[in-house]
Length: 178
Image (cartoon, rainbow, N blue to C red; front, side):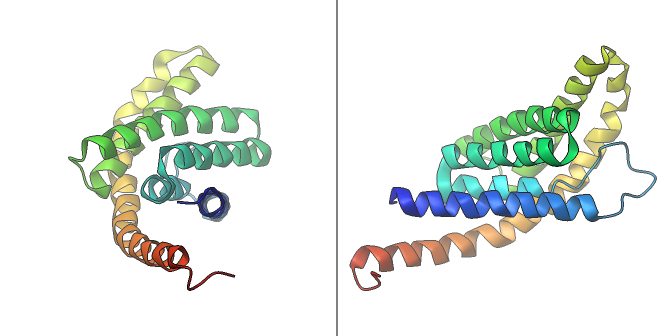
């Protein structure tokens, strides 16, 4: 894939992550949800980035997403986003590499890793390990959120890859050059 094409796709996925993060922030959070608990819509852009632009592009999407949260919500939220995103991305890359899990399995595992890393960051910030008393609840919510995000990724990624591969072949043949 040409560098300019990969860069363009990566930029579009970064924009999608930012828009999904903004959309998620605008959604009302029910009272029974824990502080900071979200569906993880922006992580959908990271999951999609792995097969579309590779590991390096997915890292870029993850970093841009965390930088946006840093600017929009402050240092603590940015730090928590970076910690959760980095661990979550590592889990995604590992599970995609071993090819034993579908999108739902990868998404559930990465959501659990994200929540665990964020609790670790909170424990570090507050210097109090009692925040891990909520881990069981965050892990249950990871199953629900990861299932939704993984299902959406599983529905969207295969046709998107097919369309992009078709476009790549068209661009490579010289018939669609601008």
